[in-house]
Length: 259
Image (cartoon, rainbow, N blue to C red; front, top):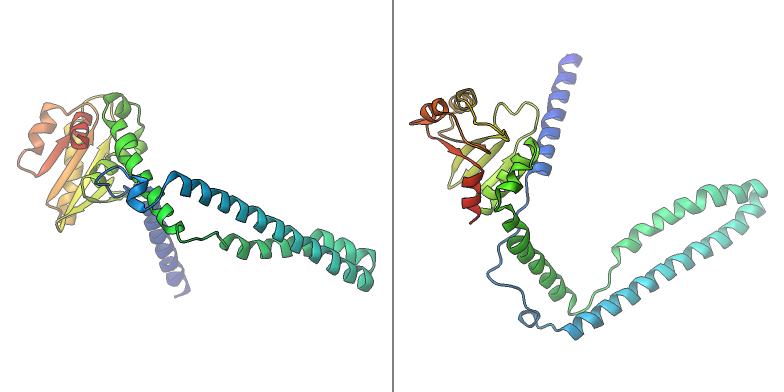
């Protein structure tokens, strides 16, 4: 009985770790802005940004100074008491153990105290939208070259393929590297689940890979599948995929999806 409970606990632990790994590996695609963020859209200006930055830096310096003063006061007052009670050993204990522990405990509430003002939320939203705009206009378009895709290893290729589908309004989940059952990415859109197999090969993909994915699809009752690779598929692979609802895509197709 104990052995069964231990095995069940191990299986549950492995399942949770696999889910956490999948969440960590799944790319986060920010919301697509409708236009480039402008300060005036947030009732902000360059002068306000400079003023708020100076106030924030001043607040941070005061917070650090207060923290140091409190640590010093604690060190002096408690150090005196420890020496009076326990002598030199008490002083050594206070310096090496008690004060460092107090410093670590005290820093927790100090990190939670942040500078705020009526403009803080507007500035935070402006910066967030600016980052999103940079991702869509600068980072994401860099994937529109074959050289980008050809320089990826297998794991990077999976994540980048997932990113492209995420940017095209698919819900994506990158599966765990081990025991993925031949499925690297699980897509969902309009209540449909799609299995994706990724192969970052520098040669054409043969029929064996397509057969493997099709077998998993049949076993899990999944109606649609995708095989993504870099440089295409053999004639037998293309022929096998026909009428099986398996889409074959290459790096060039992924670039078209980005466009």
